[in-house]
Image 1 (cartoon, one colour):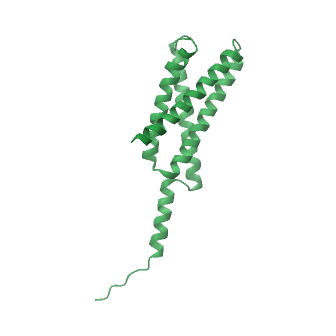
Image 2 (image 1 turned 135 degrees about the vertical axis):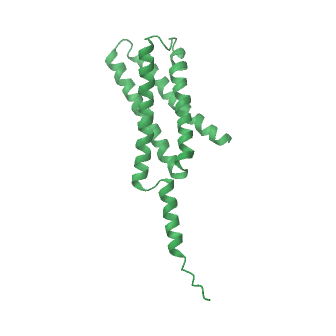
Image 3 (image 1 turned 90 degrees about the horizontal axis):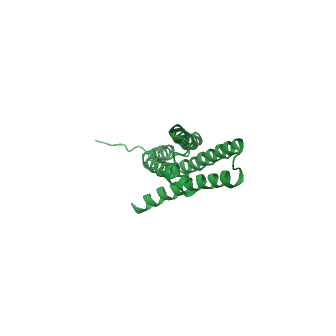
Length: 154
């Protein structure tokens, strides 16, 4: 059980760290430049999507979807809470500084980026036939074809 929480925590902290780095780059590198801030934010969402694609690809090989999907969803939920509520406070701002509409649009964009990343990673894994279910069906086909049929005489 502790191993599951450790992997959930590692992914959540990794996603949170990507967001904090992007916020620091925006604050100290492009303070006041809206177009550069939008580009850094878009890049942050791309990196978050790639991280979750990698997580889905690596975990999907070893575990069924029900197992790694719940872990990934928990990681996304924890990272979303940290990103939306704690990250602005680290930089001395309020989470609702730009208004509630901006806050909720950030939540929606974060969920879209994470879901798309995990979905694309698992889609690639399934397309290549390397997912847990395809591999177990392959092993079943190999073992059932390897055993000769027993003839029963009466």
